[in-house]
Image (cartoon, rainbow, N blue to C red; front, side, top):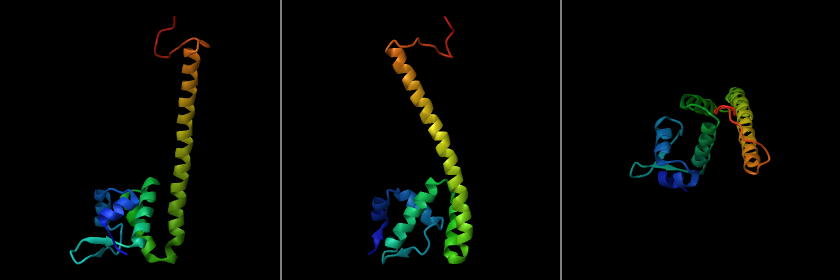
Length: 132
């Protein structure tokens, strides 16, 4: 079964503009066209487009994604290089998780402080206001 760009956007959650951009950048290889010269996609294309969305969330730039696509098109022999790329992105993501957890911990700490102040369990102090 073949799907229109609109249908693919609905299935993947990608905007029409983003999908068109990815196609124009060569990130969706072997794009097929219908009799009206409109792009159409099969299930394998949709699975690849979903992979592109994940790679984008992993922080790959368009240039890095283009390189990754070229490696994928080379087949099995490029797997070791693809693994290196993904391992590097994984490390960056793990570091971001640590940073985000620190931010969540800060918000939780401030919320607990504000709850204590509002409940009268501790006095309000601020680093921005003069001390009384």
